[in-house]
Length: 318
Image (cartoon, rainbow, N blue to C red; front, side, top):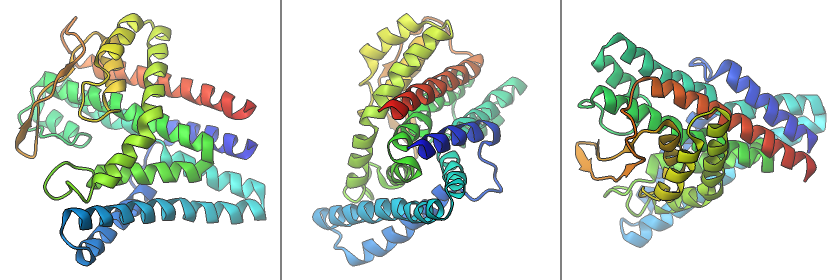
């Protein structure tokens, strides 16, 4: 137990220091390549019917999750058996690669930096690197909102949820979660191509994010109070708007962020040339400004730190 707790804590600190260097091949890319390769094979074998595609999607989920967990388990089993310090070193590195605190800050900071120059096209390009929506027609306010929303949502998916599962199952638990999260981002779409094939991945992602999303929201509310943001409004908007999203989990941290910053987020957005009608989250107490990106970073860091301390305390004593 002590080795896992140490590995998660050291991995968290490494992530804050190093982020995600482009020269370092990320394991999520390996998982993603495996998903793409297996999808092509499964589509050739299974019939192109509702049942056939769902069966193929279910097999994809089972194989990818099992392999993604089995490989690090085998490596760490051998490493810890050889030398505990070797095991700790490898598990620390794995935990570091599973977290996205620094990279989320760095990538969204590029949006802020571009906005500072007044170059809207550059700002749109910067935000297009971290969001899935169409960005070519976004205003300065739209670019800022997209960046803040991404920080809010990924505070749960990229920081709190991985920490949660790593505290339970070490790097192995973290890799299992990351595999599910990656599958959802690749095949969990409600379009013609993935309507049935992606359903198993999307449903499993909803299940594994159910608890982390809600923990993230309450930790973020606590963080808002500690940072002397509008914690009272953060709680109010969270309780009111947390289900204002097609996903049962995505709006939780977004609602808290909107309340804490006293701004309105979400609303209609374009995806692949198609307008998607979405409800607003939060109240427009004040106008959105580019500095909200920096404020979202502070709340993200505080939420991550609180999660590390609280999850670590529970792991140590229980």
